[in-house]
Image (cartoon, rainbow over all chains, first blue to last red; front, side, top):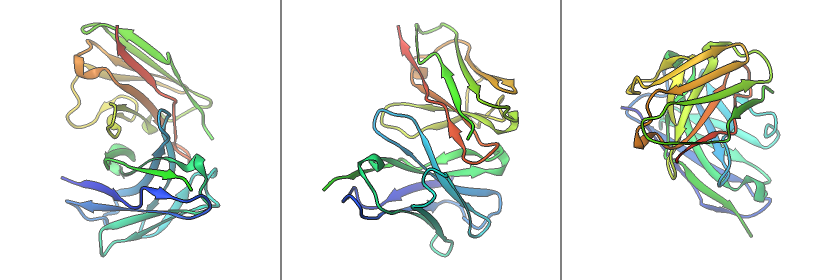
Length: 121
Length: 108
């Protein structure tokens, strides 16, 4: 059974770079049947799709964040990562990594438990 | 981007009652790419339905989805205590994938 787990600093200073890693266990990231996504959720608010990586390195980003976001993958470690530059308090949120599955028409079928990132000086 | 509007914002019902949650899109969404998620406090969202009307693995049959075009509905036929949560619809027919703002189903 595939499991995802986010890791990274819980506190980031304004203007700095947020970096998170999602570790995938119980399955290989190399399968073409899956895309790998990041989603975030500010406290008490709704979900925002950040972007995804697929096909060995192709990416797709939310235009609202595109200038600041990079998603990368390390299939040898079965991990993918999120970098968000020039953060502000508006980037404070719970960050989730998740899998999009072809068998589910690319719905988000497996999610990590989420990690809270607070942007504060 | 495609905007999804969910209604009502909050639904106050008793266990055993039927819940109908609406998701309206700002433009046509291919039903294959419309999903519903359930989120409980402190937990990650859980996939309930994909392709608008197909239940994900392990989802009980009291959950059903319907709709096409711009109007979609998630129905819970008889609310169980564990069903009180927030529900989100999501479209992923076109990037960026977008979510509705959520409907909270609370105990009356």
